[in-house]
Length: 515
Image (tube, rainbow, N blue to C red; front, side, top):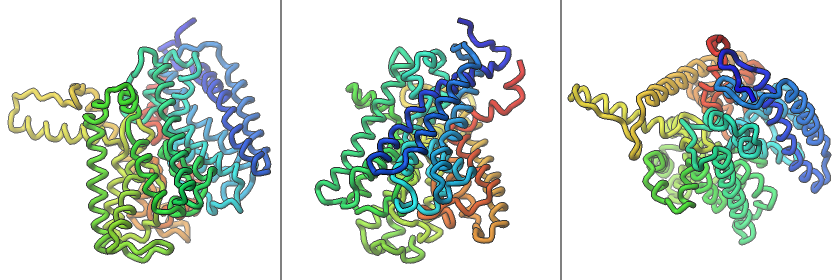
């Protein structure tokens, strides 16, 4: 079996393996088919999706008989898979033909937001009166499939992708790299997915358990499963128009630990289950992750409790100023949801004072842990930046000192530090450029009138795969009002943000295609 030629990009091989991925993903629409049958709804949108996926997958597979991936082919496979799958994911929205997601641009936005676990939406009216139970479950399922990674799942089950699997997983999975937990990368992928599935099932049982004991009257089986499917991938889609505000305080508190888990490196749970709990408790990134969330939460809770963080009374929400439990709950929930890029909301933070919103905007840039389902910049990168800044100050005083940077017991290679600074610079550059472009675009949409803070929130919400923003794109609103070109640009941002930017940008450079 020949190995892909390193002198050129064997795009046929990459496309063929994209076909294999799509063919096996054709089983995914079966779940909403069962939901549709149960509720007496049309199965056509999902049967059609499965049929098209099989046809496209089998067709693409014919392009090449090779299976061994080279370095360049792995980049292309990852990038194309995360384009082709969301494009095919539009079919249920288009066939159903209901609401604002019935058009191709909006359907692509919703599908890309789902599979990249962004959580931004153009679904103007989210209700069972407007959309079927099955379609809303497909929306939830798209985030669950994208959370741990479509290709990580395929590496786990397909032997043809286990060759080159480490390269695929490192390019697709959020963070700097995937820990090789077992000698075989296929077993590592399976271990990660088992942990992911296990926490999903546990979340569904806890959510529904609150209903059983009378603490969550509207958290039935459907809602419990639907929200578990978007908690663990840090997605944030909800079949409820008011997100998690629709549920009782007990439910809102129950979401918090699962969002924290979803934003934690899943490899650490593997070590913990293996009896090495110290790998979790002593992990520098994990401690920074918890510490930063706690610090931002305390600051916001103080603003809300004193009334300095509230600009106007929010409807259907208990008064916050002077109410310690409500202040802590709203601050904790929103901070954890934003830092982990889950994007749920327990209240409309459009009612917050700009000072409190600015504090929350800071949280948009943090991100969860490497190796988790979370997006944005990631805590580990900020940890390395902080250590690099301290080293720079130290060596200014002691110019002859040699001071390697450590994370835990391991020294960080200088090449990794360089890559971290390059990533953050590109991320922030894209954020600034996107803020300007989206702000200018909003000037031509009469109903928008974005402020500077709101435009920044739109850019980071999509590039960082966070979900909601401020103002017109607040947690109880949607991105529906943007122009079609702006939505397509945000689709691009969600795509490259999910793949850590560089994995996509590298295939857009001329050097990638030259021998």
